[in-house]
Length: 443
Image 1 (cartoon, rainbow, N blue to C red):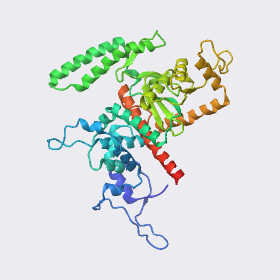
Image 2 (cartoon, rainbow, N blue to C red):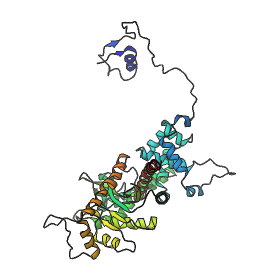
Image 3 (tube, rainbow, N blue to C red):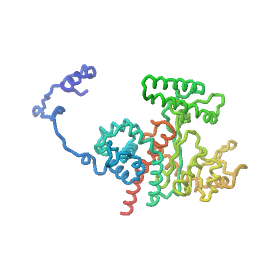
Image 4 (cartoon, one colour):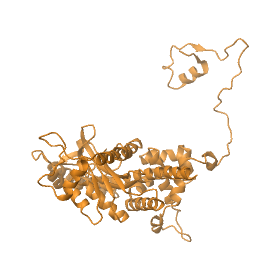
């Protein structure tokens, strides 16, 4: 064990660390060596000093925060400025530039930061976040509101950014892979209550709100929000009851997050969660579609994603790769027979009788479904399908690494906003890489 100096031991004993270093052999300040007593530069943390440096000089020229800010400056955020009341010639405090909030959340998402309070702290302590703020103060409440209240804008930005990449030739959308990722909801298992309990809780919450308003003669917003969540939980009970497989057990809804549902996770456990769907261009690994739901099954999700691409970009993907959970006969038939057809690559179900894939036409198959079965039996189709894992699952893994382990917000609308933030941040990082590859190839 290394010996510690008396200053270090005494310093620790002055605080709370004396017990930790009890029994250690004290070392003298001056340890002579063969050539004499060494001269050392010792820390003096009480020495006063004046430092003069700008935020711009403290951040490297090639730092990712600068790239994020440059990207945000090119975005059309005019809708965020239209409702501002603080304008030139009128009184009132200046508003925070929305580009600051946009850049902070994009950079935070790339950095794996998902909590508004943590982002608020980093804006005070971390030079990269300080550089983005540029001396403008922010707080966790405004950061949280900006993250969740601009779903329509984020959705439009995803469409415009991908369309721009398609115009550059970086995204062709000839082949798209889709996969779902189950993400834990911000609701505990114990928050799920049956209808009778929800009715009683709602009555108690209503009485509490009235009592607080009379007592405080003011705002009882916290209790009122709880009452609203309980009322919302009662409203979703019929939907939960309709989806339940085990009709013997009564339907339950969460008083914390009424939109959350019990979903089977990748580890086999069942927890309150959401099902996030990402569609990714296989060639560029750019996310082209985002969807969020609270249904654990992926069946039927592929058709919705194809329709989403039609709405976003005016045309569907040329080919769609999805795992077996997406292979609905209706989706395959509608996608294959559309005016602009999409070729489906998805594994064929295993026969219960033979234990092998059902490549032969089945009695309930349409011509399109039969052609899909025949196609998936070919080696070419199997090679194409292998691209799904290297694309969709890679994007999901990157999202996990960036913090998409559990949502910190509640409700489908806010969940969708967070999913869109992840898509925009991912596409920003990928577009930088694609442009660099293009520049290297050209130069």
